[in-house]
Image (cartoon, rainbow, N blue to C red; front, side):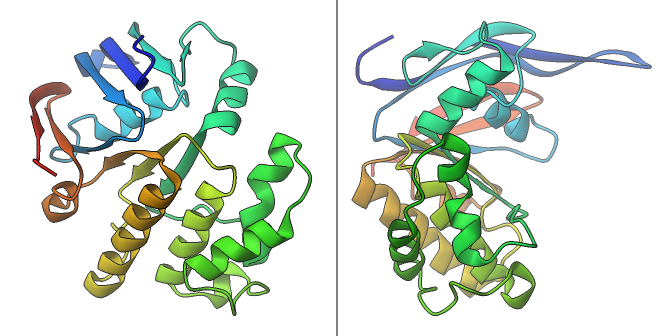
Length: 230
């Protein structure tokens, strides 16, 4: 893998066994993303976008093909080894926030540090929450926050480990227009500030066009892979 590449996907295929027979949801997908690059993966529902993101992040294993993430081929790793690569190099933002309801905003942001075994750095978490506009919400629980505020907590949590690559799965999908636009500004702003690679799955073509590159999927296959000129 090129020294400057953080993610390299080669001939990635994912097939599931179903009662009706094998179901292939990804077919021979291949691309490479340089460190610090931004890329959107778009396509209709059922095109394989979220499956592809999960494979790239090591949340699942391909049927065939390989994924090299942060310098390691992750397909042959154990679940614990893949989790270590994720903890060291990866941040996540999901459509449904995935906050822990019994923890405050500050405590939710600190979770990745605790899983990683690092010393708790409340000042770093508080600084990130202030950066996303929640400096006055540190002690609030998810149920006390709006959807947009919960997604801001999730974004702060994604950056607490200073990830080399950020995977976002429909990060604005559950937000209204103005809130979604503000969230997109925060994602791209933090990405630039911290030099993080960004891989974004979205239905929002306007959001996709803010990245440097757009990969389009249909029926599990790449039908176009184009630079946006950004």
